[in-house]
Image 1 (spheres, rainbow, N blue to C red):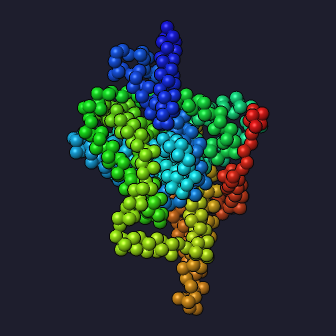
Image 2: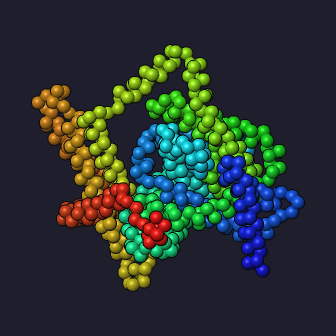
Image 3: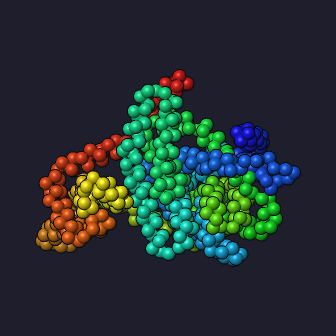
Length: 593
Protein backbone atom coordinates (compact mmCIF):
# COMPACT_ATOMS: atom_id res chain seq x y z
CA UNK A 1 0.00 0.00 0.00
CA UNK A 2 2.84 2.35 0.87
CA UNK A 3 4.52 1.58 -2.47
CA UNK A 4 1.30 2.34 -4.36
CA UNK A 5 1.02 5.70 -2.58
CA UNK A 6 4.61 6.56 -3.41
CA UNK A 7 4.12 5.65 -7.10
CA UNK A 8 0.98 7.79 -7.15
CA UNK A 9 2.81 10.81 -5.65
CA UNK A 10 5.76 10.38 -8.01
CA UNK A 11 3.44 10.09 -11.01
CA UNK A 12 1.63 13.29 -10.03
CA UNK A 13 4.92 15.15 -9.51
CA UNK A 14 6.36 14.14 -12.90
CA UNK A 15 3.06 14.61 -14.79
CA UNK A 16 2.37 18.14 -13.53
CA UNK A 17 6.05 19.07 -13.84
CA UNK A 18 6.09 17.83 -17.44
CA UNK A 19 3.00 19.80 -18.46
CA UNK A 20 4.05 23.05 -16.77
CA UNK A 21 7.65 22.92 -18.06
CA UNK A 22 6.39 22.33 -21.60
CA UNK A 23 4.43 25.58 -21.29
CA UNK A 24 7.44 27.40 -19.85
CA UNK A 25 9.65 26.10 -22.65
CA UNK A 26 7.04 27.17 -25.20
CA UNK A 27 7.09 30.75 -23.86
CA UNK A 28 10.92 30.71 -23.46
CA UNK A 29 10.96 31.07 -19.69
CA UNK A 30 13.41 29.30 -17.29
CA UNK A 31 12.34 25.68 -16.90
CA UNK A 32 13.41 25.77 -13.23
CA UNK A 33 10.53 28.17 -12.53
CA UNK A 34 8.19 25.67 -14.20
CA UNK A 35 9.25 22.97 -11.75
CA UNK A 36 8.67 25.33 -8.80
CA UNK A 37 5.22 26.32 -10.15
CA UNK A 38 4.37 22.61 -10.53
CA UNK A 39 5.18 22.15 -6.84
CA UNK A 40 2.96 25.10 -5.93
CA UNK A 41 0.07 23.64 -7.96
CA UNK A 42 0.18 20.24 -6.23
CA UNK A 43 1.27 21.61 -2.85
CA UNK A 44 -0.72 21.53 0.39
CA UNK A 45 -1.35 25.31 0.33
CA UNK A 46 -3.14 25.29 -3.05
CA UNK A 47 -6.88 24.47 -2.97
CA UNK A 48 -9.12 22.60 -3.54
CA UNK A 49 -7.33 19.49 -2.19
CA UNK A 50 -3.89 18.04 -1.46
CA UNK A 51 -2.50 15.84 -4.23
CA UNK A 52 0.67 14.65 -2.44
CA UNK A 53 0.19 12.18 0.43
CA UNK A 54 3.75 11.05 1.27
CA UNK A 55 5.73 14.28 1.38
CA UNK A 56 8.54 12.75 3.46
CA UNK A 57 9.48 10.42 0.60
CA UNK A 58 9.41 13.33 -1.84
CA UNK A 59 11.74 15.22 0.51
CA UNK A 60 14.17 12.29 0.50
CA UNK A 61 14.14 12.29 -3.31
CA UNK A 62 14.69 16.06 -3.19
CA UNK A 63 17.83 15.44 -1.09
CA UNK A 64 19.05 13.24 -3.93
CA UNK A 65 18.25 16.15 -6.23
CA UNK A 66 20.56 18.39 -4.20
CA UNK A 67 23.33 15.78 -4.47
CA UNK A 68 23.02 15.45 -8.24
CA UNK A 69 22.62 19.21 -8.76
CA UNK A 70 25.81 19.99 -6.83
CA UNK A 71 27.59 16.99 -8.35
CA UNK A 72 26.97 18.22 -11.90
CA UNK A 73 28.00 21.76 -10.91
CA UNK A 74 31.25 20.21 -9.68
CA UNK A 75 31.67 18.41 -13.01
CA UNK A 76 31.66 21.82 -14.76
CA UNK A 77 34.36 23.11 -12.39
CA UNK A 78 38.01 22.51 -13.24
CA UNK A 79 41.18 23.86 -11.68
CA UNK A 80 42.29 25.10 -15.12
CA UNK A 81 39.07 27.03 -15.51
CA UNK A 82 39.49 28.46 -12.01
CA UNK A 83 43.03 29.62 -12.82
CA UNK A 84 42.00 31.13 -16.16
CA UNK A 85 39.32 33.45 -14.76
CA UNK A 86 41.88 35.07 -12.46
CA UNK A 87 41.55 37.58 -9.68
CA UNK A 88 38.85 39.58 -11.47
CA UNK A 89 36.27 36.86 -10.90
CA UNK A 90 37.37 36.30 -7.30
CA UNK A 91 37.17 40.05 -6.60
CA UNK A 92 33.70 40.18 -8.14
CA UNK A 93 32.43 37.20 -6.14
CA UNK A 94 33.81 38.55 -2.86
CA UNK A 95 32.32 42.01 -3.48
CA UNK A 96 28.94 40.48 -4.35
CA UNK A 97 28.84 38.22 -1.31
CA UNK A 98 30.09 40.86 1.14
CA UNK A 99 27.56 43.51 0.02
CA UNK A 100 24.59 41.13 -0.17
CA UNK A 101 25.38 39.51 3.19
CA UNK A 102 25.32 42.99 4.75
CA UNK A 103 22.17 43.97 2.84
CA UNK A 104 20.28 40.79 3.77
CA UNK A 105 21.22 41.11 7.43
CA UNK A 106 20.23 44.79 7.46
CA UNK A 107 16.84 44.05 5.87
CA UNK A 108 16.11 41.34 8.44
CA UNK A 109 17.05 43.61 11.33
CA UNK A 110 14.95 46.45 9.84
CA UNK A 111 11.85 44.23 9.80
CA UNK A 112 12.69 42.77 13.23
CA UNK A 113 13.21 39.20 11.99
CA UNK A 114 16.19 38.47 14.25
CA UNK A 115 19.91 37.90 13.78
CA UNK A 116 19.78 34.25 12.64
CA UNK A 117 17.16 35.03 9.98
CA UNK A 118 19.38 37.93 8.90
CA UNK A 119 22.47 35.74 8.54
CA UNK A 120 20.61 33.15 6.46
CA UNK A 121 18.82 35.81 4.37
CA UNK A 122 22.16 37.47 3.60
CA UNK A 123 23.61 34.11 2.54
CA UNK A 124 20.56 33.42 0.32
CA UNK A 125 20.87 36.77 -1.46
CA UNK A 126 24.63 36.58 -1.96
CA UNK A 127 24.81 33.72 -4.50
CA UNK A 128 23.60 34.05 -8.09
CA UNK A 129 21.93 31.22 -10.02
CA UNK A 130 24.33 29.22 -12.20
CA UNK A 131 21.51 27.19 -13.76
CA UNK A 132 19.38 30.17 -14.78
CA UNK A 133 22.26 32.35 -16.02
CA UNK A 134 23.74 29.61 -18.21
CA UNK A 135 20.29 28.88 -19.65
CA UNK A 136 19.57 32.56 -20.40
CA UNK A 137 22.99 33.22 -21.98
CA UNK A 138 22.60 30.08 -24.09
CA UNK A 139 19.17 31.20 -25.30
CA UNK A 140 20.52 34.69 -26.10
CA UNK A 141 23.54 33.19 -27.95
CA UNK A 142 25.96 35.15 -25.72
CA UNK A 143 27.87 32.34 -23.96
CA UNK A 144 31.16 33.08 -25.75
CA UNK A 145 31.28 36.85 -25.26
CA UNK A 146 33.78 38.52 -22.92
CA UNK A 147 31.24 39.48 -20.24
CA UNK A 148 29.80 35.94 -20.24
CA UNK A 149 33.25 34.48 -19.50
CA UNK A 150 33.60 36.90 -16.58
CA UNK A 151 30.14 35.89 -15.32
CA UNK A 152 31.09 32.19 -15.50
CA UNK A 153 34.27 32.94 -13.56
CA UNK A 154 32.35 34.77 -10.82
CA UNK A 155 29.84 31.90 -10.72
CA UNK A 156 32.67 29.41 -10.14
CA UNK A 157 33.90 31.36 -7.13
CA UNK A 158 30.27 31.89 -6.07
CA UNK A 159 29.74 28.13 -5.98
CA UNK A 160 32.96 27.52 -4.03
CA UNK A 161 32.19 30.25 -1.50
CA UNK A 162 28.57 29.08 -1.24
CA UNK A 163 29.77 25.60 -0.30
CA UNK A 164 31.92 27.22 2.38
CA UNK A 165 28.94 29.27 3.58
CA UNK A 166 26.77 26.16 3.88
CA UNK A 167 29.38 24.48 6.08
CA UNK A 168 29.83 27.69 8.09
CA UNK A 169 26.09 28.26 8.51
CA UNK A 170 25.64 24.68 9.74
CA UNK A 171 28.30 25.29 12.40
CA UNK A 172 26.80 28.64 13.41
CA UNK A 173 23.28 27.19 13.61
CA UNK A 174 24.41 24.25 15.76
CA UNK A 175 26.74 26.16 18.11
CA UNK A 176 24.92 29.48 18.04
CA UNK A 177 28.29 31.25 17.86
CA UNK A 178 29.29 33.81 15.26
CA UNK A 179 32.63 34.67 16.89
CA UNK A 180 35.75 35.40 14.86
CA UNK A 181 37.63 32.43 16.31
CA UNK A 182 34.81 30.00 15.50
CA UNK A 183 34.47 31.35 11.94
CA UNK A 184 38.23 31.22 11.25
CA UNK A 185 38.47 27.73 12.74
CA UNK A 186 35.61 26.46 10.57
CA UNK A 187 37.04 28.08 7.42
CA UNK A 188 40.52 26.73 8.18
CA UNK A 189 39.31 23.17 8.65
CA UNK A 190 37.14 23.43 5.54
CA UNK A 191 40.08 24.72 3.46
CA UNK A 192 42.33 21.89 4.68
CA UNK A 193 39.65 19.34 3.91
CA UNK A 194 39.09 20.66 0.38
CA UNK A 195 42.83 20.84 -0.42
CA UNK A 196 43.44 17.29 0.83
CA UNK A 197 40.32 15.93 -0.88
CA UNK A 198 41.18 17.54 -4.22
CA UNK A 199 44.85 16.48 -4.22
CA UNK A 200 44.27 12.89 -3.06
CA UNK A 201 41.09 12.56 -5.12
CA UNK A 202 42.77 13.75 -8.33
CA UNK A 203 45.55 11.21 -7.75
CA UNK A 204 43.15 8.29 -7.21
CA UNK A 205 39.74 8.82 -8.83
CA UNK A 206 40.74 9.53 -12.49
CA UNK A 207 42.93 6.40 -12.47
CA UNK A 208 40.06 4.32 -11.16
CA UNK A 209 37.80 5.73 -13.88
CA UNK A 210 40.49 4.93 -16.49
CA UNK A 211 40.47 1.31 -15.29
CA UNK A 212 36.65 1.05 -15.48
CA UNK A 213 36.61 2.71 -18.92
CA UNK A 214 38.77 -0.10 -20.32
CA UNK A 215 35.65 -2.32 -20.31
CA UNK A 216 33.87 0.14 -22.66
CA UNK A 217 30.56 -0.24 -20.82
CA UNK A 218 28.39 2.75 -19.93
CA UNK A 219 26.52 0.80 -17.26
CA UNK A 220 29.73 -0.02 -15.36
CA UNK A 221 30.87 3.60 -15.65
CA UNK A 222 27.53 4.91 -14.33
CA UNK A 223 27.53 2.55 -11.33
CA UNK A 224 31.15 3.44 -10.53
CA UNK A 225 30.44 7.18 -10.73
CA UNK A 226 27.38 6.85 -8.48
CA UNK A 227 29.32 4.70 -6.01
CA UNK A 228 32.10 7.29 -5.79
CA UNK A 229 29.59 10.12 -5.46
CA UNK A 230 27.53 8.59 -2.64
CA UNK A 231 30.57 7.07 -0.95
CA UNK A 232 32.35 10.40 -0.77
CA UNK A 233 29.16 12.13 0.43
CA UNK A 234 28.99 9.55 3.25
CA UNK A 235 32.59 10.35 4.27
CA UNK A 236 31.75 14.07 4.31
CA UNK A 237 28.68 13.44 6.49
CA UNK A 238 30.83 11.41 8.91
CA UNK A 239 33.17 14.42 9.13
CA UNK A 240 30.08 16.54 10.00
CA UNK A 241 30.10 18.60 6.82
CA UNK A 242 27.20 19.26 4.45
CA UNK A 243 26.29 16.61 1.88
CA UNK A 244 26.25 19.44 -0.69
CA UNK A 245 29.97 19.96 -0.03
CA UNK A 246 30.71 16.28 -0.68
CA UNK A 247 28.72 16.22 -3.93
CA UNK A 248 30.43 19.35 -5.27
CA UNK A 249 33.98 18.26 -4.34
CA UNK A 250 33.68 14.74 -5.81
CA UNK A 251 32.23 16.32 -8.97
CA UNK A 252 35.22 18.68 -9.16
CA UNK A 253 37.57 15.71 -8.72
CA UNK A 254 35.90 13.78 -11.55
CA UNK A 255 36.06 16.91 -13.71
CA UNK A 256 39.82 16.29 -14.03
CA UNK A 257 39.21 12.88 -15.65
CA UNK A 258 39.69 12.41 -19.38
CA UNK A 259 36.29 10.66 -19.40
CA UNK A 260 34.33 13.72 -18.29
CA UNK A 261 32.24 13.92 -21.56
CA UNK A 262 31.08 10.33 -21.06
CA UNK A 263 30.34 10.91 -17.36
CA UNK A 264 28.30 14.03 -18.12
CA UNK A 265 26.31 12.21 -20.81
CA UNK A 266 25.40 9.18 -18.70
CA UNK A 267 24.68 11.16 -15.52
CA UNK A 268 22.53 13.80 -17.25
CA UNK A 269 19.21 11.85 -17.30
CA UNK A 270 19.59 10.89 -13.63
CA UNK A 271 20.42 14.50 -12.73
CA UNK A 272 17.46 15.86 -14.69
CA UNK A 273 14.97 13.62 -12.94
CA UNK A 274 16.11 14.22 -9.36
CA UNK A 275 16.77 17.93 -9.94
CA UNK A 276 13.20 18.27 -11.20
CA UNK A 277 11.94 16.62 -8.01
CA UNK A 278 14.13 18.95 -5.94
CA UNK A 279 12.65 22.10 -7.49
CA UNK A 280 9.12 20.66 -7.29
CA UNK A 281 9.73 20.02 -3.57
CA UNK A 282 10.66 23.69 -3.23
CA UNK A 283 7.30 24.60 -4.72
CA UNK A 284 5.54 22.25 -2.28
CA UNK A 285 6.80 24.40 0.61
CA UNK A 286 5.61 27.64 -0.98
CA UNK A 287 2.56 29.24 0.60
CA UNK A 288 0.98 31.75 -1.84
CA UNK A 289 -0.45 33.63 1.13
CA UNK A 290 3.12 34.68 1.96
CA UNK A 291 3.05 36.85 -1.18
CA UNK A 292 0.30 38.95 0.36
CA UNK A 293 1.53 38.93 3.95
CA UNK A 294 5.12 39.77 2.99
CA UNK A 295 4.57 41.67 -0.27
CA UNK A 296 6.48 44.71 1.00
CA UNK A 297 9.62 42.82 2.11
CA UNK A 298 9.59 40.73 -1.09
CA UNK A 299 9.51 43.87 -3.28
CA UNK A 300 12.26 45.50 -1.20
CA UNK A 301 14.47 42.38 -1.28
CA UNK A 302 13.98 42.06 -5.06
CA UNK A 303 15.04 45.69 -5.61
CA UNK A 304 18.06 45.23 -3.31
CA UNK A 305 19.11 42.05 -5.15
CA UNK A 306 18.94 43.68 -8.60
CA UNK A 307 20.61 46.99 -7.75
CA UNK A 308 22.95 45.58 -5.10
CA UNK A 309 24.40 42.92 -7.41
CA UNK A 310 24.50 45.37 -10.32
CA UNK A 311 26.57 47.74 -8.20
CA UNK A 312 28.81 45.12 -6.52
CA UNK A 313 29.64 42.98 -9.57
CA UNK A 314 29.67 45.88 -12.03
CA UNK A 315 31.95 48.02 -9.86
CA UNK A 316 34.28 45.08 -9.12
CA UNK A 317 34.58 44.31 -12.85
CA UNK A 318 35.31 47.96 -13.67
CA UNK A 319 37.90 48.28 -10.87
CA UNK A 320 39.58 45.13 -12.23
CA UNK A 321 40.10 46.93 -15.55
CA UNK A 322 37.09 46.03 -17.72
CA UNK A 323 35.16 48.55 -19.80
CA UNK A 324 31.99 50.21 -18.54
CA UNK A 325 29.88 48.28 -21.06
CA UNK A 326 31.32 44.91 -20.05
CA UNK A 327 30.99 45.76 -16.35
CA UNK A 328 27.35 46.78 -16.78
CA UNK A 329 26.54 43.52 -18.56
CA UNK A 330 28.27 41.50 -15.83
CA UNK A 331 26.29 43.28 -13.11
CA UNK A 332 22.99 42.91 -14.94
CA UNK A 333 23.62 39.24 -15.70
CA UNK A 334 24.22 38.31 -12.05
CA UNK A 335 21.20 40.13 -10.61
CA UNK A 336 19.22 37.12 -9.39
CA UNK A 337 19.26 34.31 -6.83
CA UNK A 338 18.70 30.62 -7.44
CA UNK A 339 19.47 27.02 -6.49
CA UNK A 340 22.01 27.68 -3.72
CA UNK A 341 19.53 30.11 -2.14
CA UNK A 342 17.00 27.29 -1.91
CA UNK A 343 19.59 24.93 -0.44
CA UNK A 344 20.56 27.52 2.20
CA UNK A 345 16.90 28.21 2.98
CA UNK A 346 16.20 24.47 3.30
CA UNK A 347 19.22 24.16 5.61
CA UNK A 348 17.83 26.84 7.91
CA UNK A 349 14.45 25.11 8.03
CA UNK A 350 15.89 21.64 8.64
CA UNK A 351 18.01 22.98 11.52
CA UNK A 352 14.94 24.87 12.83
CA UNK A 353 16.84 28.16 13.18
CA UNK A 354 14.93 30.28 10.63
CA UNK A 355 11.30 31.39 10.45
CA UNK A 356 8.85 29.61 8.15
CA UNK A 357 8.24 32.69 5.99
CA UNK A 358 11.90 32.95 4.92
CA UNK A 359 11.80 29.96 2.54
CA UNK A 360 8.78 31.08 0.44
CA UNK A 361 10.11 34.64 0.50
CA UNK A 362 13.36 33.42 -1.10
CA UNK A 363 11.37 31.43 -3.68
CA UNK A 364 9.30 34.51 -4.58
CA UNK A 365 12.38 36.73 -4.95
CA UNK A 366 14.12 34.06 -7.04
CA UNK A 367 11.11 33.76 -9.34
CA UNK A 368 10.88 37.51 -9.94
CA UNK A 369 14.63 38.08 -10.43
CA UNK A 370 14.93 35.02 -12.71
CA UNK A 371 12.14 36.33 -14.95
CA UNK A 372 13.91 39.71 -15.07
CA UNK A 373 17.34 38.26 -15.95
CA UNK A 374 17.02 38.05 -19.79
CA UNK A 375 15.56 41.55 -19.93
CA UNK A 376 18.28 42.96 -17.66
CA UNK A 377 20.99 41.52 -19.92
CA UNK A 378 19.26 43.01 -22.99
CA UNK A 379 18.94 46.41 -21.29
CA UNK A 380 22.62 46.47 -20.23
CA UNK A 381 23.95 47.98 -23.49
CA UNK A 382 21.38 50.79 -23.83
CA UNK A 383 21.77 51.64 -20.15
CA UNK A 384 25.59 51.72 -20.35
CA UNK A 385 25.38 54.01 -23.43
CA UNK A 386 23.01 56.39 -21.65
CA UNK A 387 25.23 56.48 -18.57
CA UNK A 388 28.30 57.06 -20.75
CA UNK A 389 26.60 59.96 -22.56
CA UNK A 390 25.42 61.45 -19.27
CA UNK A 391 28.84 61.34 -17.60
CA UNK A 392 30.88 64.57 -17.45
CA UNK A 393 33.98 64.55 -19.71
CA UNK A 394 36.23 64.85 -16.65
CA UNK A 395 34.85 61.60 -15.19
CA UNK A 396 35.39 59.82 -18.53
CA UNK A 397 38.98 61.14 -18.63
CA UNK A 398 39.66 59.87 -15.09
CA UNK A 399 38.32 56.46 -16.07
CA UNK A 400 40.66 56.33 -19.06
CA UNK A 401 43.61 57.32 -16.86
CA UNK A 402 42.69 54.55 -14.43
CA UNK A 403 42.62 51.92 -17.22
CA UNK A 404 46.01 53.14 -18.50
CA UNK A 405 47.48 52.97 -15.00
CA UNK A 406 46.22 49.41 -14.52
CA UNK A 407 47.94 48.29 -17.71
CA UNK A 408 51.17 50.04 -16.71
CA UNK A 409 51.49 48.22 -13.37
CA UNK A 410 51.12 44.78 -14.93
CA UNK A 411 54.50 42.95 -14.70
CA UNK A 412 56.20 42.56 -18.06
CA UNK A 413 59.04 40.41 -19.38
CA UNK A 414 61.39 39.09 -16.69
CA UNK A 415 59.28 40.57 -13.89
CA UNK A 416 56.20 38.70 -15.08
CA UNK A 417 58.15 35.45 -15.41
CA UNK A 418 59.68 35.88 -11.94
CA UNK A 419 56.26 36.66 -10.43
CA UNK A 420 54.81 33.51 -12.03
CA UNK A 421 57.66 31.39 -10.58
CA UNK A 422 57.14 32.86 -7.10
CA UNK A 423 53.37 32.24 -7.26
CA UNK A 424 53.90 28.64 -8.36
CA UNK A 425 56.42 27.93 -5.58
CA UNK A 426 54.22 29.53 -2.90
CA UNK A 427 51.21 27.52 -4.09
CA UNK A 428 53.17 24.26 -4.00
CA UNK A 429 54.46 25.01 -0.49
CA UNK A 430 50.95 25.84 0.78
CA UNK A 431 49.52 22.62 -0.68
CA UNK A 432 52.30 20.50 0.83
CA UNK A 433 51.91 22.07 4.28
CA UNK A 434 48.13 21.67 4.08
CA UNK A 435 48.60 17.95 3.36
CA UNK A 436 50.98 17.65 6.33
CA UNK A 437 48.41 19.32 8.58
CA UNK A 438 45.65 17.01 7.35
CA UNK A 439 47.82 13.92 7.97
CA UNK A 440 48.49 14.89 11.60
CA UNK A 441 44.87 15.94 12.16
CA UNK A 442 43.82 12.56 10.82
CA UNK A 443 46.27 10.87 13.18
CA UNK A 444 44.82 12.85 16.10
CA UNK A 445 41.26 11.91 15.03
CA UNK A 446 41.97 8.17 14.77
CA UNK A 447 44.54 7.94 17.60
CA UNK A 448 42.09 6.88 20.37
CA UNK A 449 40.69 4.01 18.29
CA UNK A 450 44.13 2.84 17.13
CA UNK A 451 45.65 3.07 20.62
CA UNK A 452 42.66 1.18 22.04
CA UNK A 453 43.02 -1.56 19.42
CA UNK A 454 46.75 -1.90 20.14
CA UNK A 455 46.00 -2.09 23.88
CA UNK A 456 43.82 -5.12 23.20
CA UNK A 457 46.92 -6.74 21.70
CA UNK A 458 48.89 -6.02 24.88
CA UNK A 459 50.71 -2.89 23.69
CA UNK A 460 50.95 -0.01 26.19
CA UNK A 461 49.23 3.31 25.26
CA UNK A 462 52.67 4.94 25.15
CA UNK A 463 53.71 2.72 22.26
CA UNK A 464 50.35 3.06 20.54
CA UNK A 465 50.74 6.85 20.45
CA UNK A 466 54.25 6.46 19.04
CA UNK A 467 52.95 4.14 16.32
CA UNK A 468 50.30 6.67 15.28
CA UNK A 469 52.79 9.55 15.40
CA UNK A 470 55.40 7.58 13.45
CA UNK A 471 52.87 6.76 10.73
CA UNK A 472 51.91 10.44 10.47
CA UNK A 473 55.58 11.46 10.20
CA UNK A 474 56.35 8.87 7.52
CA UNK A 475 53.35 10.00 5.46
CA UNK A 476 54.13 13.72 5.83
CA UNK A 477 57.95 13.68 5.45
CA UNK A 478 57.90 13.70 1.61
CA UNK A 479 55.70 16.82 1.67
CA UNK A 480 57.89 18.51 4.32
CA UNK A 481 61.10 17.82 2.39
CA UNK A 482 59.54 18.98 -0.87
CA UNK A 483 58.27 22.19 0.75
CA UNK A 484 61.72 22.82 2.22
CA UNK A 485 63.33 22.36 -1.22
CA UNK A 486 60.81 24.71 -2.83
CA UNK A 487 61.47 27.39 -0.22
CA UNK A 488 65.23 27.06 -0.78
CA UNK A 489 64.62 27.74 -4.46
CA UNK A 490 62.34 30.65 -3.52
CA UNK A 491 65.06 32.14 -1.31
CA UNK A 492 67.46 32.14 -4.26
CA UNK A 493 64.90 33.85 -6.53
CA UNK A 494 64.15 36.48 -3.88
CA UNK A 495 67.85 37.06 -3.21
CA UNK A 496 68.53 37.62 -6.91
CA UNK A 497 65.56 39.92 -7.46
CA UNK A 498 65.65 41.96 -4.23
CA UNK A 499 69.37 42.79 -4.01
CA UNK A 500 70.86 44.42 -7.11
CA UNK A 501 74.52 45.38 -7.56
CA UNK A 502 73.42 48.90 -8.50
CA UNK A 503 72.06 49.40 -4.96
CA UNK A 504 74.28 47.18 -2.76
CA UNK A 505 77.50 47.56 -4.75
CA UNK A 506 80.22 45.07 -3.82
CA UNK A 507 78.07 43.81 -0.93
CA UNK A 508 75.38 42.49 -3.27
CA UNK A 509 76.74 38.94 -3.48
CA UNK A 510 77.31 38.50 0.32
CA UNK A 511 73.83 39.88 1.08
CA UNK A 512 72.31 37.51 -1.45
CA UNK A 513 74.09 34.55 0.18
CA UNK A 514 72.82 35.59 3.61
CA UNK A 515 69.23 35.80 2.33
CA UNK A 516 69.60 32.47 0.50
CA UNK A 517 70.75 30.77 3.73
CA UNK A 518 68.54 32.62 6.21
CA UNK A 519 65.18 31.76 4.61
CA UNK A 520 65.84 27.96 4.57
CA UNK A 521 67.03 28.12 8.20
CA UNK A 522 63.90 29.97 9.30
CA UNK A 523 61.87 27.51 7.25
CA UNK A 524 63.42 24.54 9.05
CA UNK A 525 62.62 26.08 12.45
CA UNK A 526 59.07 26.83 11.29
CA UNK A 527 58.54 23.27 10.06
CA UNK A 528 59.74 21.83 13.38
CA UNK A 529 57.37 24.14 15.26
CA UNK A 530 54.51 23.11 12.95
CA UNK A 531 55.20 19.40 13.54
CA UNK A 532 55.50 20.05 17.30
CA UNK A 533 52.13 21.82 17.43
CA UNK A 534 50.43 19.15 15.32
CA UNK A 535 52.00 16.35 17.40
CA UNK A 536 50.66 17.58 20.75
CA UNK A 537 47.32 15.91 20.09
CA UNK A 538 49.00 12.53 19.62
CA UNK A 539 52.06 12.38 21.91
CA UNK A 540 51.27 12.55 25.64
CA UNK A 541 54.46 14.20 27.03
CA UNK A 542 56.87 16.97 26.00
CA UNK A 543 59.90 14.68 26.49
CA UNK A 544 58.54 12.30 23.87
CA UNK A 545 57.89 15.26 21.60
CA UNK A 546 61.49 16.54 21.77
CA UNK A 547 62.85 13.03 21.22
CA UNK A 548 60.59 12.52 18.22
CA UNK A 549 61.47 15.89 16.67
CA UNK A 550 65.13 14.91 16.79
CA UNK A 551 64.25 11.63 15.10
CA UNK A 552 62.40 13.57 12.38
CA UNK A 553 65.57 15.49 11.55
CA UNK A 554 67.67 12.31 11.46
CA UNK A 555 65.12 10.35 9.42
CA UNK A 556 64.67 13.22 6.97
CA UNK A 557 68.44 13.53 6.49
CA UNK A 558 68.99 9.81 5.92
CA UNK A 559 66.01 9.20 3.60
CA UNK A 560 65.72 12.59 1.90
CA UNK A 561 66.61 11.44 -1.62
CA UNK A 562 64.24 8.46 -1.54
CA UNK A 563 61.39 10.49 -0.04
CA UNK A 564 61.87 13.28 -2.58
CA UNK A 565 61.68 10.71 -5.39
CA UNK A 566 58.37 9.45 -3.99
CA UNK A 567 57.05 13.02 -3.84
CA UNK A 568 58.29 13.74 -7.38
CA UNK A 569 56.43 10.70 -8.71
CA UNK A 570 53.22 11.78 -6.97
CA UNK A 571 53.61 15.34 -8.26
CA UNK A 572 54.24 14.08 -11.79
CA UNK A 573 51.13 11.91 -11.57
CA UNK A 574 49.10 14.91 -10.37
CA UNK A 575 50.39 17.14 -13.18
CA UNK A 576 49.74 14.42 -15.75
CA UNK A 577 46.14 14.09 -14.58
CA UNK A 578 45.57 17.84 -14.67
CA UNK A 579 47.03 18.11 -18.17
CA UNK A 580 44.32 18.30 -20.82
CA UNK A 581 43.70 15.00 -22.58
CA UNK A 582 41.45 13.93 -25.43
CA UNK A 583 38.11 12.38 -24.66
CA UNK A 584 38.13 8.59 -24.47
CA UNK A 585 34.84 7.20 -25.71
CA UNK A 586 33.08 4.06 -24.63
CA UNK A 587 31.74 1.57 -27.13
CA UNK A 588 28.22 3.03 -26.93
CA UNK A 589 29.60 6.51 -27.65
CA UNK A 590 31.50 5.30 -30.70
CA UNK A 591 28.35 3.71 -32.10
CA UNK A 592 26.44 6.97 -31.72
CA UNK A 593 29.18 8.97 -33.41
